Amino acid sequence: MSKVSLIELSDYSIIIDGAKEGINDFYFTLAPGDVCSIDADLQDDAYGFLKALATLIYPLKGIYRYNGEKLDFSDYRNLLSTKRKIGYIAYDAAMISNLTVRQNLLLERFFFENRLDIDLTETVKEMCDNFGLIDKLDVSPTQLNSIDLQMAISIRELTKSPEVILLDRPEDFIGHARFDRLFRFFQKMVKKGMTAVFNSYNTEFIDEFATRKIVIHDHGLTSVLP
Image (cartoon, rainbow, N blue to C red; front, side):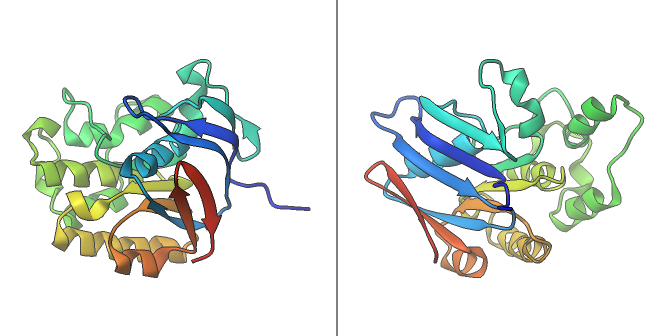
């Protein structure tokens, strides 16, 4: 019996708001344990593909299946359980400004566990310490500099135990020292069977982690082995 893909996009077409063209009529599958790098002519296409995987762009046409189940885009609430399983780290990811960093990191647990008397796990605290955020947990995200804010978002997404991690150009917004720490963290996650799709210019990152390459050329998509 064949293994069900974690993500399957069939006869899929997408476009980013404001773009003249998108990615047309493509088929893509992501199996558990795949780590895919993106090689695109246009950054809009790479960015749009990641957002589509994150269910943040609704398709112009096509079918999105997650673990074999067809997603219903008619109401955003239908997608919440799937979004919870996907970690999305990119420029447009955000935190809620009227909550503290700690509350933002706990927000998903507040919702799904339906209780407020919880604190960060030791794993999350350790990551906050490693990435220089342990003393900034009780401030508003608006008080963080851009690098600290992106690190807080990264920690939130990585520690919610996602089934898939989507990552857009981390070298551009994390900074060199913290990028090295993220690199080491990814090494540990890959050894545990992490599934991921990432867009990066860093050849060391690509060579270390990619098991497949997604090529987006002239608004068409193909997937090849590295």
